[in-house]
Image (cartoon, rainbow, N blue to C red):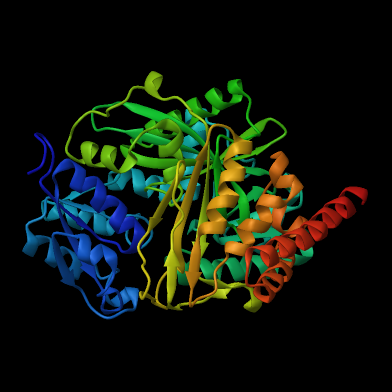
Length: 491
């Protein structure tokens, strides 16, 4: 039985570790849970964990997790009061949000109007400028043709960024270094935007080279309370996809930390937002610029929970039930340091391509300061239809140095057999001088040729079977890392 004032039954319209994460929060509050699953996920942990489970079709997402009518039918059949979309799939789909509301079901997320505003990078940028939020220099209009694009680029100055207004997840972004590349790039982005998002609107921003990517967690209720839970540094990226996140960021002074937090709250209030969301900023030379707002729970939310001692999934359920937030801004403090590692089934020897398959061995690290959010187990087969994430390894320490050393231990203990993973990537990053010092940015991976170093390290690891061999392999790759760093500095 749910606690007084809370919705009684929730369906999670998602899969894997995030479905399990939300269901655990529900369990602690006495809320009944409903899972939906595809044929490919029939043996998944989240299906077993839920109070009720319903098959919604074949493996491909368009025939299951993205089928809005099927999801609504199950929700009505199961008499749920709320639907939590997790992240990905339909989490930022305003049509699905409105379908939930139309059928008397609470969408556990922001209102559709806020999603629409922030889903359009052009419209959101206009509203942020009007509210006084600092944004990246550029224009707030869709580019109609090549001539207008060239005119704007000349005004701003090359290099520039072409961005799909409806883009997300790193898709629909392209840097254009000069006018020669402009025409081809614009046509390419417009086609990609149309095919990916159904909207070919593209706009131009000034390209800021080698920034840091800083995002702020915000949380608001339906009664007008809005707070931030400080920042996450997300600068370790490959092709705009985040791989490692940490909090606090080494780049921010206490004064800047509070100032950007106030800007994040202002942005969320301007959008008429409630529930959990993330305001993303670029940061360079003590200047920050609002990029966009992700109107959902983020993959990396656990590190915020660990350093602020909060439960974001629980707060989302409170907000959906019409209750006040459990916290005021003055209650939120940062305690210690936390890093999240996305453990993906990827093949380092095949350009880190997804590597689905059966997990023949699986052991999670444990001990003080270590949390693992996962939806797999030994014997589970990772389907080829979805994201290749195996688990999220979240490590907390009293300070950053302690957190890094504990992370090395946790990664050493993490065992995944049967599929190749990117664990070697994380081990290499933790030894790199630039990361260890905290002096890195979004160009970290290409600047230091990290992926090439990971391949070499992976080969060395495969040659050894025991701890001594692994230590020797790590020592060898450390020499490569240091040499690469010194070479870069000397240029």
